[in-house]
Amino acid sequence: MSLQDTSSSGVALWRLVADGIERGIAEGRFAAGEKLPGEMEIAETYRVNRHTVRRALAALAERGLVRAERGSGTYVEEQKIAYPLRSRTRFSEIVGAGGREPRGQLIDASQDVASRELARELGLKTGAPLVRIESVRLADRAPICVSTAWLSAERFPGAGDVFASVRSMTKLLEHFGVRDYRRASTRITAGIVDATDAARLDLALGRPILVVDSTDVDPDGRPLVTKRSRFAAERVEFLVENG
Amino acid sequence: MSLQDTSSSGVALWRLVADGIERGIAEGRFAAGEKLPGEMEIAETYRVNRHTVRRALAALAERGLVRAERGSGTYVEEQKIAYPLRSRTRFSEIVGAGGREPRGQLIDASQDVASRELARELGLKTGAPLVRIESVRLADRAPICVSTAWLSAERFPGAGDVFASVRSMTKLLEHFGVRDYRRASTRITAGIVDATDAARLDLALGRPILVVDSTDVDPDGRPLVTKRSRFAAERVEFLVENG
DNA sequence: TCAAGTTGTCTATGATAATAGACAACTTGA
DNA sequence: TCAAGTTGTCTATTATCATAGACAACTTGA
Image 1 (cartoon, rainbow over the protein chains, first blue to last red):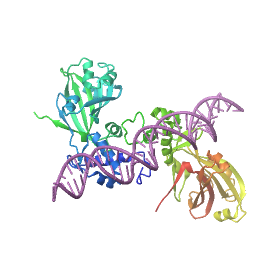
Image 2 (image 1 turned 45 degrees about the vertical axis):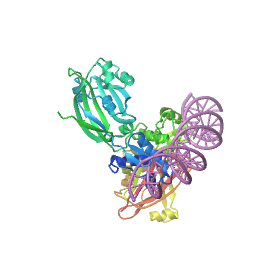
Image 3 (image 1 turned 90 degrees about the horizontal axis):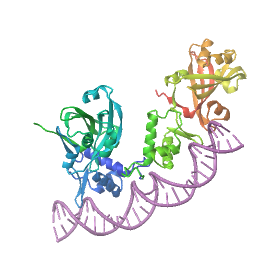
Image 4 (image 1 turned 90 degrees about the vertical axis):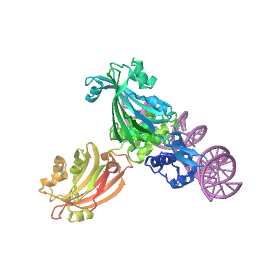
């Protein structure tokens, strides 16, 4: 690989450079909209070839973190997704409104039983059978958040299989005859990403995440689904609607 | 890279496999001393070529986490027993402190006469009658070391029979009224196990051993016993206390 | 003793990573 | 307009990664 990487770590050099630059952006050393150092300069600071830097920058550009302008320089994109918190929140609409293409993907679906907290949120009894759905949601190709959703297994039998094909919670609910739903409660905290979510979100370890606990109810107020979503803090900002 | 890794993550496949196996060990899915699945089986579970698995295992073996045995399998290395070298060294205490069960076992006891070196160590005259005790010490079921101990036959008559029943040098000395003792000298070398010790230590021929020559003395400094112990290098590490 | 299963080693091939150099195309500020 | 500095693209070379197949060497249990 290179003189520095005599250990042959199994991690490509361009990836180390890309991670370094991304960290620089995340930590604010390179502000949004600002010009990055030239490719030559980056190559010198990391002691790698310019082409390796270009590979790293290409990976970042692919994810929309930077944007190269020929003859001028490479700039940090300022583009946290604005995520309004309303009672009627649809991931696909929010991302689509930003000119990006929303995608959902099932990670895992399994049986579960209601803990006391989950039972309370869903209006069920402790120990009631649940379907647990782990999914990741992306804008363009960048993963935005991973969610763990719980639904009553009795009211939504085979919910995992349905979600696997429709890839959208809205469509899943539709499939079970739920025409409309609204957000009943939202609780936001922050934390540090764990290894599992880091891989799913394509995040470096140690990066902050926004944790959102939410419950959706039908128009009559009956709980449908409760979720814990972990958002990559550097890719999204929540807008609270006042009034 | 591979069919799964269409994204070209910048992390080598073998590294992902190695990390996966290491996590398995850390989480106890593969217990210490246990055999890992065969290379072919690992290759199938990760959907990867066998050579890629071998690259991963080589990296883990390099770090001493696993050990491959040709024709048999690849095994999770036992955590080496940390063996602090102090003036007050008791095998049973050290092994017990590691959460393992210490055991001693007599191999052989016989009469001997003091060579010049043994006589000097024990403060006797050359040719003085000695008791020679061969024993093996184990932690759980793994043999850790074999020792040859020499004591004065005049001061410790019938020492061999006593050791056969109490199975501990500390208790043997207690039996003869020695309430306390300490390590007067310790000399460490390394070598290759011979056929006799290999059988006793359950070691393959050609494996390295740590050879420790030591003499214990009573609180007044009078020599009690001198030993030559051979430790299976792969099961123990000596800690030198600094200061 | 033998067959099945295991790790070790060899050759071979194609894809990717990293290096190097050269030049084109473009932007910016003087 | 021009020079300096920037990104984009091309060719080329070497090393590593990953796959594939074959067989040797060895262990284990029947």
